[in-house]
Amino acid sequence: MLPTQRRQEILAEVRTSAAVSAEDLALRFGVSVETIRRDLRSLRDRGLLERVYGGALSVQSSEGTFTARSVKFQERKRAIARLAATLVSPDDTIAIDVGTTALEVARALPPDFRGRVLTNSVPVAMELSGNEAIELLLSGGQVRNGDSACYGRRADDFFEEFYADKAFLGSGGVHPDAGLTDYHPHEAATRRMIIAHAGASYVLADSSKLGTVAVCRVCPLSQITAVLTDSDDLQASKEAVDALAVAGCTVLHAP
Image 1: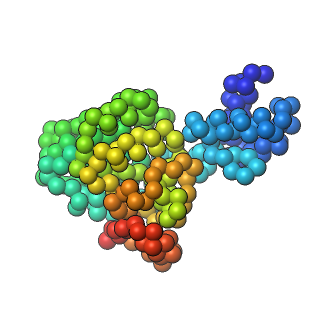
Image 2: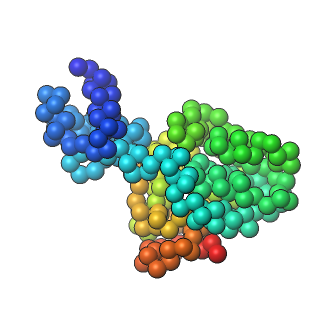
Image 3: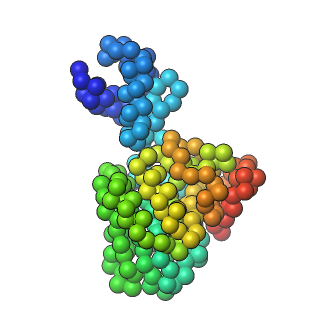
């Protein structure tokens, strides 16, 4: 069996079982554990699974599908989006990243907003496409199934050509030591470009993501302006918020 064929079968197994063991895969395919580890690293680097000690997890087992995440903590995300909207001035150029909370930001933009929106999210572009007061620019690039997120060289080059007043960023997790993290390496690269070309960068993270570390690091906390989160789970997230504050991160709570 060719390595590409073996990796396709490994990925199918991960998606079916949600979690796999490197030793079990080595026995199944008749190769060494080190060979399986290389396969898992290759699939991880492409954003197709998450590496854990002794094996791997499905990305969806950690992140979930776009539809499932759209309804999970929906009121929290809408509250965060309303907070984000208060930071937008009528003539701003803003970047709206991918993700379910980012889509809520597009829906929450104030009625008097007549600026420019840069996005790599097809759902965000669809949401705003009928608004004639907004100049809408979609990055293009390869589109990932599920989130309909644009990524790759075309997306990176697009954001390199613009400077936004404010950027609203999706997140897989926000941690005082690991910083801003995500589940998809290619989109993490695009996010880094957005941050580098934004006057202010706001991370959209409901309280379940505070203190969480996803598979791919985007940037340290020092590169973001603030984390926008909800107030629904303040008691449970107090320790995580305190740790972020100690690390020098500004956390803004949506009312």
